[in-house]
Length: 245
View 1 (cartoon, one colour):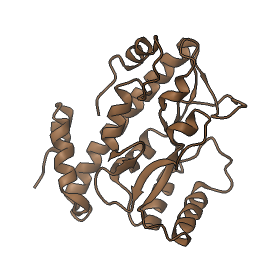
View 2: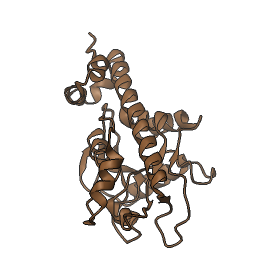
View 3: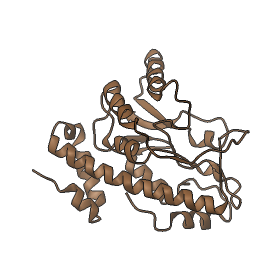
Protein backbone atom coordinates (compact mmCIF):
# COMPACT_ATOMS: atom_id res chain seq x y z
CA UNK A 1 0.00 0.00 0.00
CA UNK A 2 1.44 3.35 -1.05
CA UNK A 3 2.65 5.65 1.73
CA UNK A 4 2.51 8.74 -0.56
CA UNK A 5 5.81 9.80 0.97
CA UNK A 6 6.88 11.88 -2.02
CA UNK A 7 3.69 13.93 -2.23
CA UNK A 8 3.83 14.61 1.51
CA UNK A 9 7.52 15.52 1.30
CA UNK A 10 6.84 17.96 -1.53
CA UNK A 11 3.99 19.46 0.50
CA UNK A 12 6.40 20.25 3.33
CA UNK A 13 5.72 17.27 5.61
CA UNK A 14 9.41 16.40 5.55
CA UNK A 15 10.29 15.46 9.14
CA UNK A 16 7.43 12.93 9.56
CA UNK A 17 8.28 11.39 6.19
CA UNK A 18 11.93 10.87 7.17
CA UNK A 19 10.81 9.47 10.53
CA UNK A 20 8.45 6.97 8.90
CA UNK A 21 11.02 5.85 6.37
CA UNK A 22 13.68 5.42 9.06
CA UNK A 23 11.23 3.33 11.11
CA UNK A 24 11.09 0.85 8.23
CA UNK A 25 14.79 0.07 8.77
CA UNK A 26 16.39 -2.12 6.12
CA UNK A 27 13.02 -3.82 5.52
CA UNK A 28 12.36 -0.94 3.13
CA UNK A 29 14.73 -2.64 0.67
CA UNK A 30 12.68 -5.87 0.74
CA UNK A 31 9.47 -4.24 -0.50
CA UNK A 32 9.89 -2.97 -4.08
CA UNK A 33 7.01 -0.50 -3.78
CA UNK A 34 8.30 1.02 -0.54
CA UNK A 35 11.87 1.10 -1.82
CA UNK A 36 10.82 2.87 -5.01
CA UNK A 37 8.82 5.49 -3.14
CA UNK A 38 11.60 6.04 -0.60
CA UNK A 39 14.15 6.38 -3.40
CA UNK A 40 11.97 9.05 -5.01
CA UNK A 41 12.02 11.05 -1.76
CA UNK A 42 15.79 10.62 -1.46
CA UNK A 43 16.25 11.71 -5.07
CA UNK A 44 14.17 14.84 -4.48
CA UNK A 45 16.20 15.55 -1.35
CA UNK A 46 19.38 15.33 -3.42
CA UNK A 47 18.02 17.65 -6.12
CA UNK A 48 17.28 20.24 -3.44
CA UNK A 49 20.71 19.69 -1.91
CA UNK A 50 22.38 20.26 -5.27
CA UNK A 51 20.51 23.54 -5.68
CA UNK A 52 21.74 24.57 -2.23
CA UNK A 53 25.32 23.68 -3.11
CA UNK A 54 25.18 25.63 -6.37
CA UNK A 55 23.71 28.69 -4.62
CA UNK A 56 26.34 28.65 -1.86
CA UNK A 57 29.20 28.19 -4.34
CA UNK A 58 27.92 31.08 -6.45
CA UNK A 59 27.60 33.35 -3.42
CA UNK A 60 31.06 32.46 -2.13
CA UNK A 61 32.56 33.05 -5.57
CA UNK A 62 30.89 36.47 -5.72
CA UNK A 63 32.41 37.22 -2.29
CA UNK A 64 35.88 36.53 -3.67
CA UNK A 65 36.23 33.25 -1.80
CA UNK A 66 39.19 31.08 -2.86
CA UNK A 67 38.50 27.34 -2.86
CA UNK A 68 41.75 25.50 -2.19
CA UNK A 69 43.39 22.45 -0.64
CA UNK A 70 43.61 22.06 3.12
CA UNK A 71 47.41 22.33 3.24
CA UNK A 72 50.13 24.94 3.15
CA UNK A 73 50.17 24.98 -0.67
CA UNK A 74 46.52 26.08 -0.88
CA UNK A 75 46.25 24.77 -4.42
CA UNK A 76 43.08 26.13 -6.10
CA UNK A 77 40.27 23.58 -6.38
CA UNK A 78 36.93 23.31 -8.14
CA UNK A 79 34.29 23.37 -5.37
CA UNK A 80 31.63 21.26 -7.08
CA UNK A 81 31.99 18.36 -9.48
CA UNK A 82 28.61 17.16 -10.78
CA UNK A 83 28.15 13.38 -11.05
CA UNK A 84 29.73 11.66 -14.03
CA UNK A 85 28.27 8.89 -16.16
CA UNK A 86 30.22 6.34 -14.09
CA UNK A 87 28.70 7.16 -10.71
CA UNK A 88 25.87 4.62 -10.92
CA UNK A 89 28.45 1.89 -11.50
CA UNK A 90 30.30 3.05 -8.38
CA UNK A 91 27.26 3.10 -6.10
CA UNK A 92 26.17 -0.30 -7.40
CA UNK A 93 29.66 -1.60 -6.61
CA UNK A 94 29.44 -0.11 -3.10
CA UNK A 95 26.09 -1.84 -2.60
CA UNK A 96 27.60 -5.17 -3.60
CA UNK A 97 30.92 -4.77 -1.81
CA UNK A 98 29.62 -3.39 1.48
CA UNK A 99 26.31 -5.21 1.64
CA UNK A 100 24.06 -2.18 0.89
CA UNK A 101 24.49 1.56 1.30
CA UNK A 102 21.72 3.97 2.37
CA UNK A 103 19.39 5.30 -0.29
CA UNK A 104 20.26 8.89 0.64
CA UNK A 105 23.92 8.26 -0.15
CA UNK A 106 22.99 6.72 -3.51
CA UNK A 107 20.88 9.78 -4.31
CA UNK A 108 23.60 12.22 -3.25
CA UNK A 109 26.09 10.45 -5.50
CA UNK A 110 23.75 10.40 -8.52
CA UNK A 111 22.35 13.92 -8.25
CA UNK A 112 24.78 16.13 -6.31
CA UNK A 113 28.31 14.87 -6.91
CA UNK A 114 31.46 15.91 -5.05
CA UNK A 115 31.57 19.08 -2.94
CA UNK A 116 34.60 20.86 -1.43
CA UNK A 117 34.00 24.18 0.33
CA UNK A 118 37.36 24.49 2.11
CA UNK A 119 39.01 27.78 1.26
CA UNK A 120 39.68 31.40 2.28
CA UNK A 121 37.17 34.24 2.57
CA UNK A 122 38.41 37.83 2.27
CA UNK A 123 36.19 38.96 5.18
CA UNK A 124 36.45 35.78 7.24
CA UNK A 125 40.11 34.74 7.51
CA UNK A 126 39.50 31.57 9.53
CA UNK A 127 36.55 30.24 7.52
CA UNK A 128 38.38 26.92 7.08
CA UNK A 129 38.02 26.40 10.85
CA UNK A 130 34.22 26.48 10.50
CA UNK A 131 34.13 22.85 9.28
CA UNK A 132 33.08 23.73 5.70
CA UNK A 133 31.03 21.15 3.84
CA UNK A 134 33.06 18.47 2.08
CA UNK A 135 31.53 15.31 0.61
CA UNK A 136 33.51 13.46 -2.03
CA UNK A 137 32.21 10.00 -2.92
CA UNK A 138 33.11 9.77 -6.60
CA UNK A 139 36.52 11.39 -6.15
CA UNK A 140 36.22 13.46 -9.32
CA UNK A 141 39.16 15.73 -8.51
CA UNK A 142 41.57 12.82 -8.09
CA UNK A 143 43.40 10.94 -10.88
CA UNK A 144 41.24 8.42 -12.71
CA UNK A 145 43.63 5.58 -11.86
CA UNK A 146 43.25 3.74 -9.61
CA UNK A 147 39.44 4.03 -9.46
CA UNK A 148 37.72 5.06 -6.23
CA UNK A 149 36.44 1.52 -5.81
CA UNK A 150 40.06 0.42 -5.26
CA UNK A 151 40.49 3.09 -2.59
CA UNK A 152 37.34 2.03 -0.74
CA UNK A 153 38.29 -1.64 -1.01
CA UNK A 154 41.74 -0.94 0.46
CA UNK A 155 40.20 1.06 3.32
CA UNK A 156 37.88 -1.85 4.09
CA UNK A 157 40.77 -4.32 3.95
CA UNK A 158 42.82 -2.27 6.41
CA UNK A 159 39.82 -2.02 8.72
CA UNK A 160 39.30 -5.78 8.60
CA UNK A 161 42.98 -6.51 9.19
CA UNK A 162 43.07 -4.11 12.11
CA UNK A 163 40.34 -5.98 13.93
CA UNK A 164 38.48 -2.74 14.64
CA UNK A 165 35.29 -3.49 16.57
CA UNK A 166 33.68 -0.25 15.40
CA UNK A 167 31.37 -0.14 12.38
CA UNK A 168 33.03 0.61 9.06
CA UNK A 169 32.68 4.20 7.83
CA UNK A 170 32.98 4.98 4.11
CA UNK A 171 35.36 7.99 4.18
CA UNK A 172 33.85 11.02 2.46
CA UNK A 173 35.58 14.01 4.03
CA UNK A 174 38.51 15.05 6.20
CA UNK A 175 37.43 15.83 9.74
CA UNK A 176 36.84 19.44 10.79
CA UNK A 177 40.35 19.90 12.17
CA UNK A 178 42.08 18.53 9.07
CA UNK A 179 40.03 20.93 6.96
CA UNK A 180 41.78 23.73 8.85
CA UNK A 181 45.19 22.18 8.05
CA UNK A 182 45.81 20.80 11.52
CA UNK A 183 46.25 17.25 12.73
CA UNK A 184 42.89 15.78 13.65
CA UNK A 185 40.85 12.64 13.84
CA UNK A 186 39.46 10.05 11.42
CA UNK A 187 37.53 11.08 8.29
CA UNK A 188 33.84 11.86 8.29
CA UNK A 189 31.66 9.40 6.44
CA UNK A 190 28.63 7.12 6.33
CA UNK A 191 28.34 3.81 8.18
CA UNK A 192 27.93 0.67 6.07
CA UNK A 193 26.38 -1.79 5.58
CA UNK A 194 23.07 -0.03 5.99
CA UNK A 195 20.03 -0.80 3.88
CA UNK A 196 17.87 1.95 5.40
CA UNK A 197 16.46 4.88 3.47
CA UNK A 198 18.67 7.31 5.39
CA UNK A 199 22.04 6.35 6.80
CA UNK A 200 24.11 7.48 9.74
CA UNK A 201 26.70 10.17 9.10
CA UNK A 202 29.73 10.10 11.41
CA UNK A 203 31.21 13.56 11.87
CA UNK A 204 31.75 15.58 15.01
CA UNK A 205 28.74 13.61 16.18
CA UNK A 206 26.75 10.75 14.67
CA UNK A 207 23.38 11.66 13.18
CA UNK A 208 21.12 10.74 10.26
CA UNK A 209 22.72 11.92 7.03
CA UNK A 210 19.84 14.25 6.14
CA UNK A 211 19.91 15.82 9.62
CA UNK A 212 23.61 16.52 9.12
CA UNK A 213 22.97 18.12 5.73
CA UNK A 214 20.20 20.34 7.11
CA UNK A 215 22.47 21.33 9.99
CA UNK A 216 25.22 22.35 7.56
CA UNK A 217 22.98 24.15 5.07
CA UNK A 218 21.28 26.19 7.81
CA UNK A 219 24.67 27.85 8.33
CA UNK A 220 25.45 28.29 4.65
CA UNK A 221 27.82 25.31 4.52
CA UNK A 222 29.92 26.37 7.56
CA UNK A 223 28.35 24.94 10.74
CA UNK A 224 31.12 25.46 13.31
CA UNK A 225 31.33 28.85 15.04
CA UNK A 226 34.78 30.46 14.88
CA UNK A 227 34.12 33.52 17.02
CA UNK A 228 34.87 36.23 14.46
CA UNK A 229 32.78 39.38 14.37
CA UNK A 230 31.62 39.27 10.75
CA UNK A 231 31.00 35.57 10.28
CA UNK A 232 27.34 35.65 11.31
CA UNK A 233 26.60 38.16 8.51
CA UNK A 234 28.36 35.95 5.99
CA UNK A 235 26.57 32.82 7.21
CA UNK A 236 23.21 34.56 7.10
CA UNK A 237 23.79 35.72 3.53
CA UNK A 238 25.00 32.29 2.39
CA UNK A 239 22.02 30.53 4.00
CA UNK A 240 19.33 32.92 2.74
CA UNK A 241 16.49 30.98 1.04
CA UNK A 242 18.39 27.70 1.28
CA UNK A 243 16.03 24.76 0.82
CA UNK A 244 15.34 22.50 3.82
CA UNK A 245 15.77 18.82 3.08
